[in-house]
Structures are given as C-alpha cells and as structure tokens.
Length: 377
Image (cartoon, rainbow, N blue to C red; front, side, top):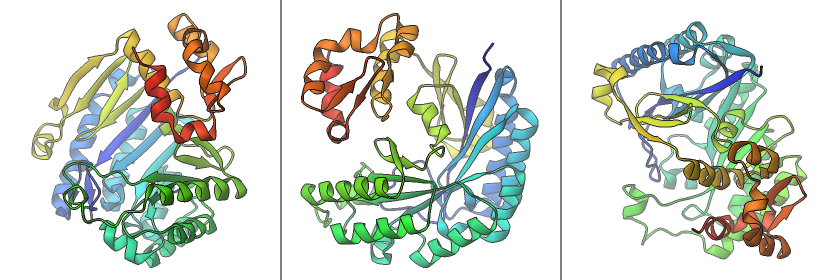
C-alpha cells in the first residue's frame, strides 16, 4: 500500500518591519519574549495534533510568515526538535524556511542546516536599493549578497529567490538588471510575482499616486523573465515559479495538487482528509491557548473539489492528468470540458496530448480569462 504523505506549514508572523504591499498576518518589531512565547505555543499546537497525523509520513515542512528567521536560533531549533520527535518524517523530507536577507547569519544558518532544514527561500524582491526602499523592505542589496554567501557556507544547496515586477518606479531595464543579479547568484528555484495592490495596505491607500509600470512594460518584464530563465536552464513548472531540474518546490506542489497539509500558528490554513479548517488571527488568544483557535471552515463538496482541482491544476505546466482526474471524479477532464477547451487548443492557448491538458505559455498569460470560461456554470 502506498504511504499516505503529509506537509506541515508553520506560520511565523514576525518581521523586522511591515512591507508597504503586505497584507499577510504579520507583526513588526515584536519583543523577544513574545516571539519565544509564540514558539512555545506552536510546540503545544504541534504536539496536540500529532495523533491525527500518526498514519502519515511527513515529506515537506515549510516555515513561512512573516519572517521565520526573525526567531532566535534556539527557538527555531526547539520547533525543529518538536517536529522530529512528534511526527514521522520521510528520509528525503524537503524542509524550507523563508528568510529576509537582513535576518540571517552564518551561525544561525549552520544551526538550521544541522537540525534538518535543507532549503532556504530568500526574499530578494529587487536588486536596487531605491526600489527596496519604496517597497518598505528591511534589507538592502548588500544584505542579499552577504546572506547568499552565508547560505552557501552553511551547506545549503537548495535556494529559492523571490522577485517582484510591476513595482513602483521600476522600469524594464531595472527589472532586467534585478533578474540578471538573481540568476548570477545561482539559485535552484526562482519565484517571480507581479505586484498586487491589496486592500488595507499602505500601497492601497496610495495607489493613485504610485508610479507603477504600464501594462505594456509589465508584459515586457514577463517576456524577459520567461526568456532568461529558460536560457539559464530553469523550467517554468507553474505560472510564477521556475526551477532547475529536480528542484521544484514539493511543498507548494502539495497546494496546487490539493494534497494533504496541516497548518500551525495564527492564520494558518489546513487541508486534511477532505476538510478545510483554519486558525484565527488573534495573537493574544493564540498565546493563551493555541489548541482552541482552530475553526472548521468547510467540507469540500465534489463540485468544489473539482473546481479547485481545475483552477490549481492549470497553473502547472504539466496541467491536468486525464487518468488522475478520472480516478477522482469518475470522468475525464477533457472528456467533460472538451467543448469549451477545443477553441483554446485551436487558438494555441492550450494543448491536449491524449493524456494531459495544459495551458501554453500564451495561455498562462491569460489564464484567469480561460479558467473563468471553462468553469462557467
């Protein structure tokens, strides 16, 4: 019998400062005592839910945020020890921590590597100090290069860099230089996202005065991204993610393939055994009783599961496997949606090879419109 596998996500909601575009649940400049108390609350929650996962093998662990490396080294090690002692881990577990370049040093990284972390996701965003300042980032370009050296010396060989385009005052040329700088650092994975103006952020309040690139400029940036990552040996395996062979983010693939994962900490979401649930965002309440903040959100109906399978599956360059879809829903994806898919295939926006349906590069550029039409009731 095939082993049941599971991913673990830990939300660490602390940052050096709050970026001007960020609408995530995070708190800047919190006291060390609060961060330690949160660590101990996480350990309590992790321990309380281990029994439910006893029949699963954990093959991905992801510390996200916020900025997980804002925690003291000892607290990071406490969390790692709890996971290793309470959960069954696979031999090749992928263990990722997000990091801000200003929050890592050689000693912390060496300790993390020694206790099980094997992948770092570094928030680069831009290679220009002026753009980083406009974004409200806590680091500068010099921090990035120091962090890259420390990551290498600590023994990490699996590195993701996050980049953004469409940010205020950015030009096609400045993005081109940021992309060149990122690729020169030889990451195994690159995630590149277009800036989204989210309600409740400083950027949202200032959006009428932000000097944002035009749509034509953003298209040029995207074209540069696809061309240069391909030339450098990266495969675009998801709309915004590019990897060297064998270095796709296995944890994020869990989300896109709707596989089981458990989330811990405030605002963390879980998808486990057909049910969705989440933790509320109240930090004080979580510190007081971390095991009572979980709320049932929904049990997915067959239609909801199908809808999300299509939405997420067509984000992947591999697309939707006909046999997998048939096993899950009792009918093939292309079989059911053939009438709507045919015109996108004929126009070069999608392909079907008899086994898989996938969007082409031009289809990914307009994926929202395609998905809206395919899934229209």
